[in-house]
Length: 253
Ligand code: BJW
Image (cartoon, rainbow, N blue to C red; front, side, top):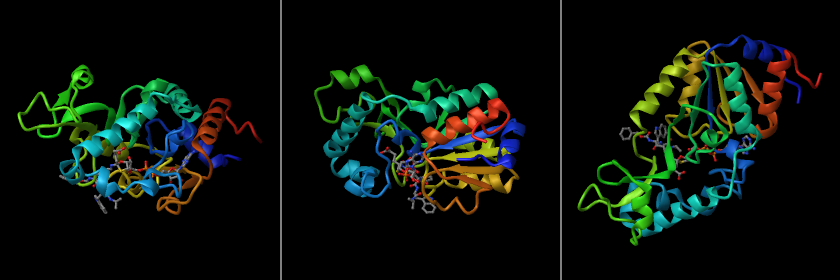
């Protein structure tokens, strides 16, 4: 893939970039995305049955066990070249803001600091009634499925993720919106750009004058609106982009 010169100029010239990632960046670590045909989680499971507060109220054991299964998968994976390239990008652009919709913690595992997690974290647990964090030692020691909450007599423990119909953590969303409105380059990586309010961040950045760039092997609702769309897997495209930034030109030319 050749990186267009105007994109390189924008990348070199920007000082307050925002990168927003989705499930696609972790696909090359072996974590399934949600909406990819055949392999995505929503091709095999119904989100209404597993990723809503109503689903948890109806069958907490099913939902808890599904998330435990996904947590176990996570213990076997590690960050890939895409996650590592973003750590490197942060070294070149100290004011970079990294926003993720992912709940897998792989950016932090790669070494990215101050990651804004819009949809929470699958490795953390909260009380379903109060939203208060629950210590993982308490979760491990409990024999119940799901564990009873230590914070509320009628509460159950649940994964600290954001389900459909739930508000995103206000602090994280406000930080992400502020960064999007103030950035000079917005890089959307590995997201289908269909889940709101995350999908609107790129549009917010574009409306405020930022250069909008997408990295994705497939077309999304953002593709036609972006200034540049790099079609390819994040694990190859991101390292190339960072190399080009370091060398001052696309090394493939
Ligand atoms: C690669 C690749 C490679 C593959 N390299 N790329 C406005 C309009 C319409 C609907 C709404 C609206 N506002 C709100 C809604 C409702 C809803 C919503 O957006 N629905 C739409 C789907 C229709 N939003 C909500 O409910 C949100 N809440 C909300 O708005 O609340 C309002 C409120 C306010 C005040 C009080 C109360 C309420 C919450 C959304 C929560 C999303 N949760 C999930 C599950 C998290 C937990 C879990 O992990 O189980 O988050 S759903 C799922 O989708 C997950 C993801 O973070 C999210 C986004 O998915 P993502 O990351 O884009 O993955 P995919 O699979 O969709 O795409 C992967 C992409 O990667 C593809 O494009 C591939 O091509 C690409 N790819 N390999 C690069 N190697």
